[in-house]
Image (cartoon, rainbow, N blue to C red; front, side, top):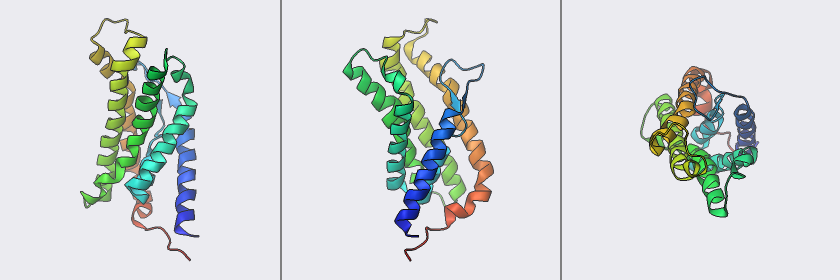
Length: 193
């Protein structure tokens, strides 16, 4: 199997796994909104570590478009085209696109495990930041919070109530799965035959 065919096949499988995992959602009693998935972003992060940042970004952008299709109902709340574009960019394209940068730390840390953990924290925090900004400039205008909190506090609490558990769950699962998947990280793709 050629390297390109293997890369495309593995990526397609991981995109499918990530998409199915994104549908398996739950909400904790603490959550002010949003849903927690069952490590839906981990397959995208693994592809970035396996094949590097460029391929990781392409995979993450593809995943963002899949998430947009699944979450299209959120865009219908936009009262105009500018707001719709803001939702698409901040809540989908940029929010999930940042996951492609997960492998940036591979050259910084000698330990792949450490690089993976830092990559998860940084990229998923980047996703949180996109939702946080969207909450302030888009969603607060559409639905002012009923608690009377400052806009930034509301956005922080709302988005943090599902993103923090999502980050912690993803870190825990990645930590547990690292040893069985270590060869996946260390073995270079098969050379063309």
